Image (cartoon, rainbow, N blue to C red; front, side, top):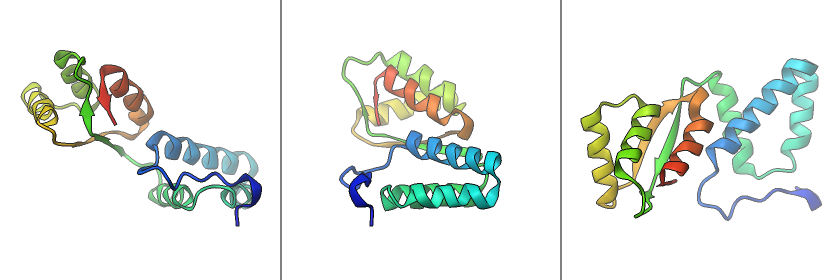
Length: 137
């Protein structure tokens, strides 16, 4: 179905939220600039060359409209990470209180994964900053 140019991300555990976000923005841009009919025709052409899971996630995001929040799964922190910087970064994007953020970092250090919610428009920046701080996503 994909031909020679199929983008297969099926081997990865999880699709990168930034990829989904950017794909959604692309679809919205072509639809805005070329009209709904031509924009969707262009998306159909492109969608035939990408992984089915990405196509599904972008479609779900389109159906949700302008999503208010994005989710990030944090699976750990590098041992060399500064705990205070991790807490500050977590608070910056989640608006958690100090005690809650500290507890989440302690849970993460105990081997638990975290699922945090960030404002959707900040989602790509949050991903970048979480990684810079030393979180493993």
